[in-house]
Image (tube, rainbow, N blue to C red):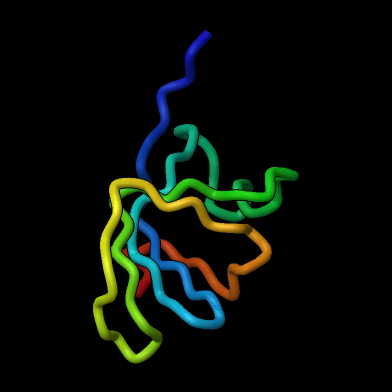
Length: 79
């Protein structure tokens, strides 16, 4: 059975970058559920990568982020 995923708009901060994009999640899941999974990497779709100061660096249809690099992750609407 295939589960349809929703794309949750997010902002992620690492030590060096700020990443805006979408995190694919099952309809009832929360961002914290994805961060607490045992998987080491998070797929970020429609990713736009910035310096911490806000300078745009690049964009990609998909970026794969090591979960251990995440300093903070918020829903984009929470900002």
